[in-house]
Length: 443
Ligand code: NAP
Ligand code: HSE
Image (tube, rainbow, N blue to C red; front, side, top):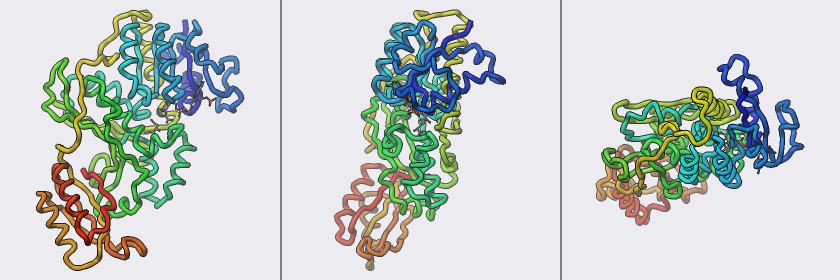
């Protein structure tokens, strides 16, 4: 007997999932045992890229969930509501859920996990982070024996696509964003991509899994690429760096905190200068990569397409198959005991620390008067704050900018954020310095 699947959404991802279910040839035999029973969309008249029986379509997501022929609910409609309520409705009905919705999981994951544990159903989220890259399952299961030191990565395909094309072709930001939307990479509201919110959702999810407890999404320091100046991308390239939107979750303590104890974490998203030889620097286009550093595994990198119909559908179907496989093996329905690894049960609390105690390198671009002694005075400000300079370079300001003065770019050695901030305050107070035009972290 086939296992009934109900889809909430038939957009980029939903259509990709339907295409796999409707073409099982050459895939694992369990795929052929999945039957698409109902599909919710917003607009019944919208042309669809697949030949789907129109009888399957409805504008009522509740009708999909409540249909007795639907045994697994796949939420790929996006947004916070009604997606959250629909996931909870499916759980209450004892139906396992597969979702690609990182926005909902990052904000309501705790509530959803508690409801799922109570009802004894799985909620699986492989597609929520990294598109086609298997990263959720490895963090939950394959790397479970490690103490995780850091999880960092490029986890937004749209912004990586934009930055890559700006750097490689000098393409204009707006044109490339429009291409990312056309290709199905961007969120319904692309502000979530370019302002860093989507990457923040994803690093919240990855950190929660890596460290064993939910991370407060609202506390994640987030900066996107929307205010990044193309000049900084160009200057960075001249100095041997590439600029990427990097998300990082790093433990601040020793990682030995036990069940019930809080583990302090530094979690953030921002444009970052990467040396050209860094493993994340070679990640181009819509690809994503996630570096996991753990004890004893060392450094493991997961790489692949981070957005788009096919890759994301691949991850969604992997989760459907996981649930179908359990059903076939155990015949279990709702109410069964869940595997704590697959269900990713929380066992620890995570707290977020502010970044002022952390140390890192920095890139700073200053617009200054072009006169003797300026570089020396800037160097003194850094030196007085105990900030060591790795390189300092003067570029000529463009006509009409910086009053025809100079642009000075400084790369510091690794320093504490608090020391760096006090040096910057002193530099800003120098009368030769017109403005601190850009300030980016550097790996
Ligand atoms: P999309 O192309 O905008 O598709 C959304 C689908 O949901 C559409 O079919 C839409 O119907 C339907 N829908 C929306 N609200 C509805 C409602 N209230 N009732 C019934 N149907 C509704 O979005 P997507 O790109 O596939 O993304 C879906 C989810 O996957 C999001 O959570 C996104 O963050 C996540 N995700 C996307 C990607 C990607 O590469 N695109 C990758 C990973 C995760 P109509 O077709 O009639 O408008
Ligand atoms: N908008 C997201 C991105 C989709 O560009 O990465 C994949 O989650």
